Every structure is written in C-alpha cells, then in structure tokens.
Image 1 (cartoon, one colour):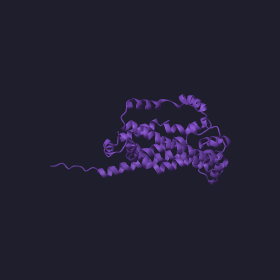
Image 2 (tube, helix red, strand yellow):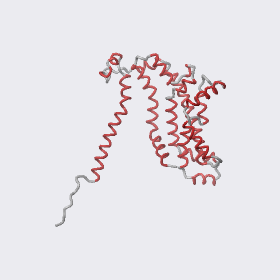
Image 3 (tube, helix red, strand yellow):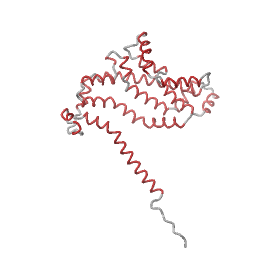
Image 4 (tube, helix red, strand yellow):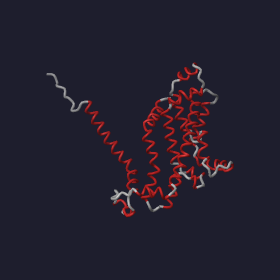
Length: 289
C-alpha cells in the first residue's frame, strides 16, 4: 500500500499573506505609538484653559480652539524669528553642501599625499564634543567682532564646520560611482571641476538631498548656537523665540503646544516631500563603497 501524503493546511502563498498581514498589524500599532506624542501636542493646543485643568480626564478637546495658533503667532514677533531662522538655515545648507561635496570628492576620487591619513583625522573630529571647543571659538569670534551677529552660525558651514559626518556620507557615495566614468571624461578633455559638476553631482543627488535634510533639521532645531552667539533679540531664531514664549506663557500649555507645532511644521513638510530621495540616499550609501 502506498502511503498517502498529507497536504499542508496552507500553501506557501497563503502563509506569505498571513505573515504580511500580521506584519502590517504590528507596524500600524507601532505607528500609533510614535504618533501619540504629536497627537497629544495637537489636542493640547486645541484645548481651552478649563480643559487643561482637568488633566487626562479631557484628552480630546470638546470645542477645538483653533484661535490658539493665531494667539501664539501674535504673542511674539513670530515672523521676524521665522525670517531669521530661514536666513540661517538656507545659508548653512548652501555652505554645508558646498564644503561637504567638494571635500568628499577630494577624499574619494583625487589622489594626493596623505589623503587617507587626513580622512582619519577628519573622522576623529566627530568624537570632539562641542563644549570642548566652545570657549576657544567664542574668544576667537569676540576678537574678530562677530559676536551678536549671524556670522558664527553661518560662515563655518562654508569651511566644513560640523560636516564631518556629511563628508563621510558623500565620500561613500562617490566611491560607489565607477571610476570609468571619470576616466572617460578625462579622455574627452574634461577637467576635475567639470567631472565634479557635470557627472558626480547629478549622480549623487539622493545623497545631497539627504545631507540637505539633515542640515535643515539640525540648524532649524538648533538652540545652543543661537543662544551663545545671538545677543540681539532682532536676530533671534524660532528656537530662541520659543524659549522666550515659554518664559512669558509658562502656564498656558495650549499656547505653548500651538507654538511648538507651528515651529515643527516646516520640518514635517520638508521630510514628507523629500522622503523618497532621503531613503534612496541612505540605502545607496549603505550599499556602495
């Protein structure tokens, strides 16, 4: 007698579908966990002062107060701080991209004496806390008359200040580009500047967008740098403005959360717009080189 083989209850396709279903359930549940702080901020910003006194008993606002956002904007020179933040952020992004791309190209594609040793020295700067160099840089900026201006926050970006990680990121991306492209361009008569601008930069667009996004988030949320170097309230950024707003309206959590959401909103918008290029930049950088 031949033994009859028992068929499994589920085939491979059905098992895959069930596994994907449970995976999506877990991911959706985790998404709610990560969204909870933002939802708490939003609901708090829409509450009335009476609902705030009830604490957790009134999690959802019964009568959403959208006017809290208008009040938060009008309570401080919001648009002045917004303009100051945008000026610093845009210039720092331009300077960081310029310095990081040129340095990364030199470390990845150019042959020069001591290149690898200097690359190690550059990476070693990642381990230096900013508190260690704060006093010397403060004294330097004081002697050249930059204190109280935006220059200490902007100029270092054009010379690679704080861009060691971005240089490493872009170097890995540059090293993943076949050298045959550069050799073919050199045979056709192109110099290194033309190779860099017309070949390398277009191919590294996802990585450059990633660097720009990281730089935007770090500069937009920076509180320590403006606190140290910006003494004139006319030059304050939104981070300093939020701190002043907290000192003025410390007991009005509805207005504080409304102001915090308004400051956080540009970061969320830019991330959602550039998330595809951001993911590509991180993924390709991890694979190449």
